[in-house]
Image 1 (cartoon, rainbow, N blue to C red):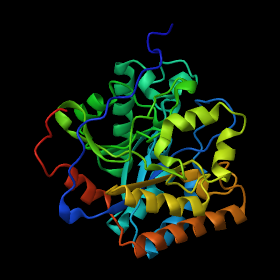
Image 2 (spheres, one colour):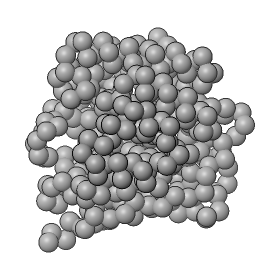
Image 3 (cartoon, rainbow, N blue to C red):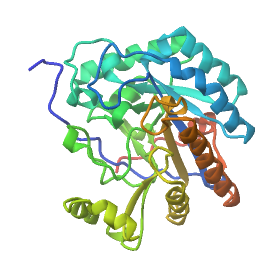
Image 4 (cartoon, helix red, strand yellow):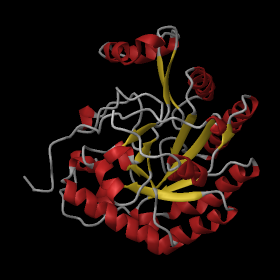
Length: 342
C-alpha cells in the first residue's frame, strides 16, 4: 500500500453546540463549491483542471447581489491557481460582502503523492501529513490568487477525517463546513454523518473551530424516525422513492441541485421550526454553466435553477431570515472564549 493511502476513516466527533448571540437572530448563508469542471460520471482525473465555467459566475453573482445576498466562494486549487478564474472571482468580491474560502479536491491539488482512487478522493483518508501538505498548497494558491489567507473550509466530497479539524486549526482556519448532515458515504470509503444534525457546534482542539454542517432535514409523516427508517427503506427496491411519493419520509438538503423547489420550501420551514439558527445552502459553481453538471443540462434547467432561488429567497424574506456575510460569521465564531470540551 502507498504509505499516503490510508483505510477509510471516521469523521471527527460532534462538539459542544454553538451558542449564537441573541442579536444574531436566524440567518442563512450560501457557500459555493467553486471548482474545476469534470466528468461527473467518469473516474477521477488529475489532469481535469478546466475552469471555463467560471465565466458564468458574474451573471449568477449579479442576481444574488440584486437581492442583497452575499456569497462565499470556496475555491479549489485549479480555480485559485488559474489567473482567469481567480481574477474573475476577485472582481466579484468588490461588492464588499462576498468572500473566498478553501475547497480541497485532493486529486487535482498538489503534492500528488497518493494513488488516484475513489477512496483517496476523500482527503481525510490520506495520511494526516499529506492532507496537511495539500491544505498548505491550497492556502498558498489562494493567497497568491486573492491576496488573503482563507479562513473558511469545506472538504471536497465532504471528505474529512479524524485529523482534519486539528490540521485546519493549526493552519488558522476559523470555520469548517465539511459535514453534510444526515448523509453517509461509507459505501464509497467516505465518512458517516448520519449522527450530525443541523446545529452549529464547536470543533477542533479546545473548540477553536466553528463547524457549520450543510443543512439537511427530514420531512414527511414519519420524519421523527429519521436515519434509522431511511436506511431500512433503502433496502427495499425503490423504497426511498415510494416513501417520498407517499409523503412518509424525505431527506432534503438545502441545495438547488436535485431538490425540487417544493421540497426545499418545506425543508426551510422545517429547519426553522427545529430552531436551526444558521441555514447553510450550497451548490457547485459549474452548475451555472449548462452542460457542466447533471443538474443544469440546458438553458431551461438554468431558468429553473434561478427560479428555485427566487422562490427560496422569497420565503426566507417572508420569514424574516436575513443573509449573513462571511465576515460577520467569522467575527461571531471568534467572539467568545474557547468553549470547554464536551
